[in-house]
Amino acid sequence: MANSNETMSAAEGTVQIGGRSLCYLQVGDPNGPLVIHNHGGPSSRLEAQVFATHALNLGLRFVCVDRPGQGKSDPQQNRTFAGWAADLEAIASALEADRFAVTGWSEGGPWALAAAAYIDPARLVHVSSIAPGSYGAFGTNWAAKYLSQADAMGGFLALHFRPGFQLMYELIDIAATRFPEQYKKGLLKASCPADLDVLADAHVLNTMAESGRECFRQGAEGLVADARMLYQQWPFDIAAIHRPVHLWQGTADTFVPYAVNKPLGERMPGAMWHEVADGGHFIAISHAAEVLAIAGKDLAATA
Image 1 (cartoon, one colour):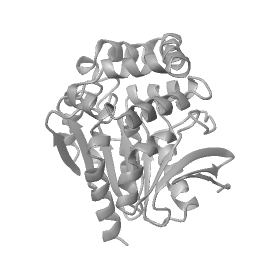
Image 2 (cartoon, rainbow, N blue to C red):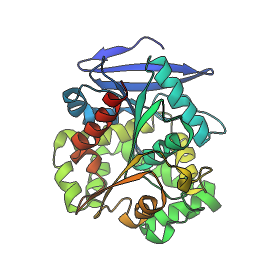
Image 3 (tube, rainbow, N blue to C red):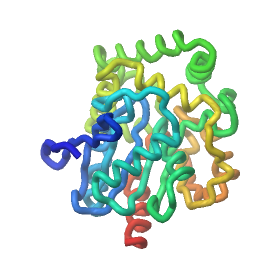
Image 4 (tube, rainbow, N blue to C red):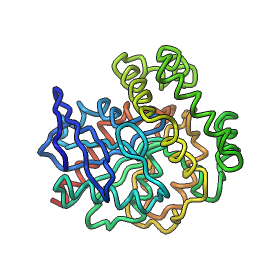
């Protein structure tokens, strides 16, 4: 692990894996049990900041890692879900954690589910997936009929016309990096009332905008590679995950609709379904204390 530079209560650092560098932001208690968080998209390690207070209150060491090609993490050719699960284990080892928890939100949710599929439960003692983008869980682009027109088109382009998909994300890149106020307005426009309540906190809205901007530090390619994998049929079987997995979903989510993830709760043997009535996509923030309290309890039980 490389040297980390601490700014206030947050510490940035890097982990070297097979010649690649993965950058993370750590918040909470640096001596507490480890929770590795998979950020959404477009987002980055900076997402950790909206969980900082809850992690500190619960005594958790909360680490959010830039996925390959996003933020400050090196790109990676031929990425796989199993490969990222192995990276999460390597990160835990570098941070000297024998046991750890994994959380994932939105586009990061499927990567948390992959961790549940590939990592030994004796080491990975808790998994939470919050409003995951489960677009390939039951076949290639299976959830298209439930998605917004823009997201459905994105899935089609991801699978059938990559230049168009690339352009889509390059336009988001331009908005996030050059026109942050317009980017924030777009985020608010797409939000349900519950999410608007969360985003009314200027710190949250500004952090999410800055985290989105940081996602494109190296351009759009890292996010394109990340998103394309979510629309393709996943290589692991949801129905074969018997270990406990906490699934969180708001019934009013306009980003990842309820209908996308309810089948996971029904068909994953180990699913522990947390339904938030009238909740939106930002239940990851509004219910962060509850999500992390369960993770902390599981970590304490195996200490």
